[in-house]
Length: 114
Image 1 (spheres, helix red, strand yellow):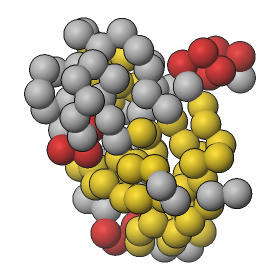
Image 2 (cartoon, one colour; image 1 turned 135 degrees about the horizontal axis):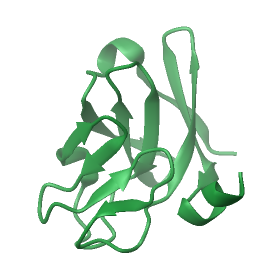
Image 3 (cartoon, helix red, strand yellow; image 1 turned 90 degrees about the vertical axis):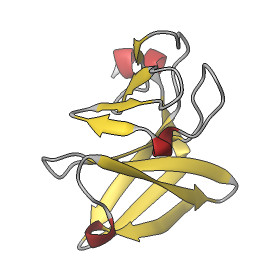
């Protein structure tokens, strides 16, 4: 199991993403304005650049390079040129501590089943 404490809620600014490492995985951790925290693979599936450097708005993270966007809940692309989803990892918040588990992956295909 690769579940690790990666941040404090106070470290996460709503509307922004930060890069964290969980085991060997680079993860973009984003906090929405409503307080929800999401974790996705920190690599755009279109151009292989860091998503954590992009903009977060509502439930979407946008790649800074070409404007591909992904739903933070499902990983599904919401704007071209990306057509392949990013992996979404399980996030839990305990008190002020944020944990990510990279062994629990939800992508656009499995999200349809849930």
